[in-house]
Image (cartoon, rainbow, N blue to C red; front, side):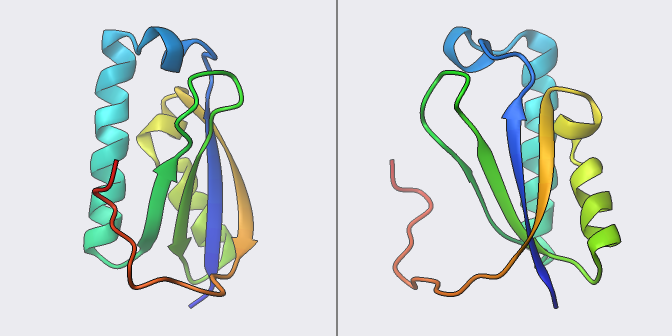
Length: 107
């Protein structure tokens, strides 16, 4: 199945440095649950973000979809995107190498 990546960035540049508002925090929680469900159903291969708290910060979601249209829909349905907390940009993508030693719980 084709792979895609979407890159997300906060729409409010100071959200990471100052912390999210209560409304933003609720939406980010829904965003995380959306991605967790994607992992559970095998669609989302990897998701994460940079650890810098400024306007250059971004996250990525690597996932599979049958078509680019389906990939765009998955990206648009991400609560952080659909509710305007983050902007997103979609790219066709292909994982070339994947380490079996990745520990997502590492700090």
